[in-house]
Image 1 (tube, rainbow, N blue to C red):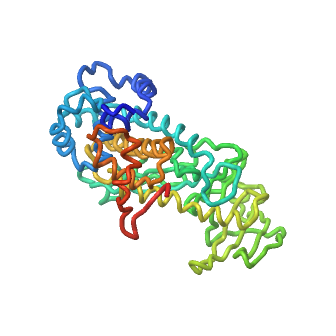
Image 2 (cartoon, rainbow, N blue to C red):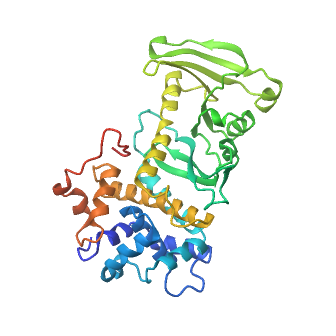
Image 3 (cartoon, one colour):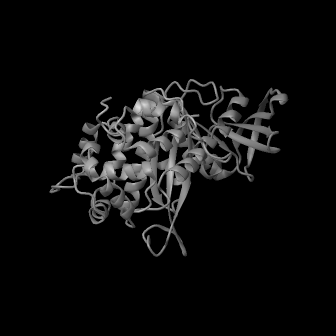
Length: 388
């Protein structure tokens, strides 16, 4: 790396500007724009994510203090609160969503061989959503409840590396199960979901796509046992059964056989019942896969805690989606840097170091591996970490 470049510009060099420009041209983002381009907007909001800025005025103040360094950071346009607010309101959020997908593809290739705790050849995904609460008077478009506004971030997380492969942002009143209609199922992959996604018609569509699902059965689940498979109860598996659905409508929605696995979680003193259309994997592996679903919950808690997606820089739907997608792209970009530079620190520690050194002119590899930063603490005992 060129020691004459700021750490921020070196971080952004891992983001392919050519691909970004293709996304901009796809939606005409820079049409009739002369001074403050989409790239300038992306750099400013990425800086805000990396340094935990709380408002547009905060971003403006910090960047204007370092006015002489903006050119070396890659920011060519004049930074002002009004310009940023207008850009967030009018520039199509799909530009940043498409660019995030470019980074996601790169990150998934880098983390393709990572271990997530279960020996498995297939790709495994965890599907879940998180609700981001908003003020109803300021975000009236984000329909959720009569006295509350919110958006939902539905995420399909690749368990290898904890990379979000699909993110869909909806109003808060959209039920989780509806997202199954938006996904293109990958043949041979395993989709791990909680009980909110139990809709046998949609699960059957996954089955018809030659993909597999693992989910929990609801308490009123009605079935007919065809036969039972032998189990080793010392592993926690209590039953492994081949079943069919009993209800008239559920049988019509899912006419094929299913596998029902009963598992006792001694650690939490809970009995769990899983449903899957995978008849080959051992019952214990199915239980272990469902336990890995917690990775997506960890992702939600981590990104809410360490990136700016709970306080927004604009109140329009476009501004909210733009900020969320840029936050996701920054998360993935730092994960790419960690892998390509072979940094051993956690993602949290990398973000902490970057937040203090973005204006420095020294090689980023040295910044992230310098022993003088070795004492950066990962936080208290309840601090969440990914890529540890």
